[in-house]
Image 1: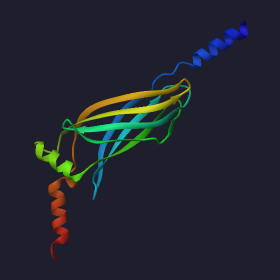
Image 2: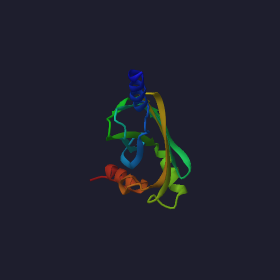
Image 3: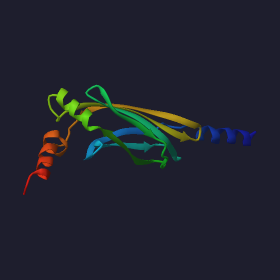
Image 4: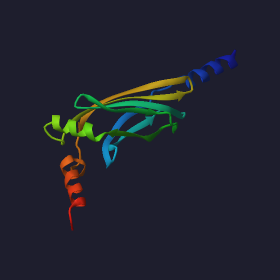
Length: 161
């Protein structure tokens, strides 16, 4: 009887999984290339449990000014160590035409409203779990990634010395 009680207590304690805390740390434009503007979305995930959790994959949609501009996902696995924080970096892209259209519709590129909707799929001792994230804020497009700066750069490349 004592052994059965001990087994129930031990397995009961292990069966409690506290969902990790997921915070949007930043959304940063990182480069512009032939395909468009590359953005990195940094999520900080804190695992409050006494055991590791495993990220099995994620999916996301990034909206700018109420319109979906980028979506995707990954099945890349990452371990979230017990009682620690781990950074998850999500690469996103906005195509040139979409960026130009967005900047035409908005009054300026300094405060574009965005919404990030994401789901993290986790493996826990009790099975798989989905952690949702829905965050809204404002994104500033740095000067060097704005259309006028890019056009000036291109003019400089093609003008005679």
